[in-house]
Amino acid sequence: VEAARAAIALAIGMYGVVFIVLAYRAGGASAVGALAVVRMLTTAVASPFGAMLGDRFARHRVMYAADLFRTALLLAIALAAVGDPPALAVFLTAAGTAAAGTVSAPARAALIPSLARTPDELAAANVLASTSEGISAFAGPSIGGLLLAFAGLETALLGAASACLVSALLVSRLAADENRAEAARRAREGRFRGATAGFHLLTRESGVRVLAAVYVAQT
Image 1 (tube, one colour):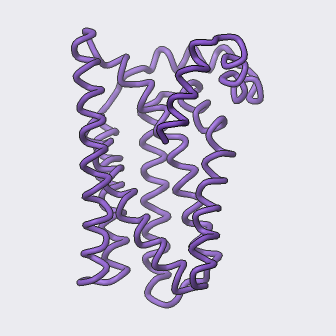
Image 2 (cartoon, rainbow, N blue to C red):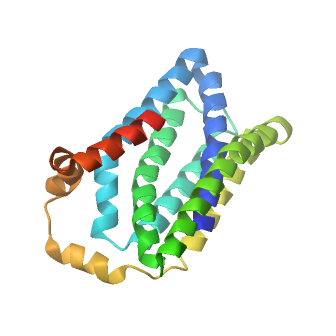
């Protein structure tokens, strides 16, 4: 799981740089600004519903599907980058990858505690997660920039797609949390209720509100 996390974080850093270049080529600085807005709005809107999927279906399968979806999007935009893809194509790809992130990240976060056998293993996994994400946040844009400079847009996108595919292959080896996913499906909780459950929890639990506020402040 942690290796898959590192691979996908590397991919995010790589294609984030490439998207900026593609947007600038398509529409200049205004398109780059619009790209940032599209990615943030997509994340904000999709997050409640994306997180719900990890509770309704087997989490490793949710992560696998999200990684494959990102891979397909990156391969498609890599083919389009042979020419000059319009800004709309860049925006749609960026929105799709952002939406996939709202699905896989919560599923991964919820899956790790079920895999840890002891509190020490869980603590070690959290430390490893923060370390790998920090390294990938630096390495991803760096590798993406180097590939852009020396090999071109298409190669940089193929590199990011390869990292997503590696993450998918790693996740495909997991077979945990099936029972919980089946129980969630049998519960048949309404989609809207499931998507808004987190907000209801915030209104009831002061401790959760504090943690959420700290997280927002840090990010």
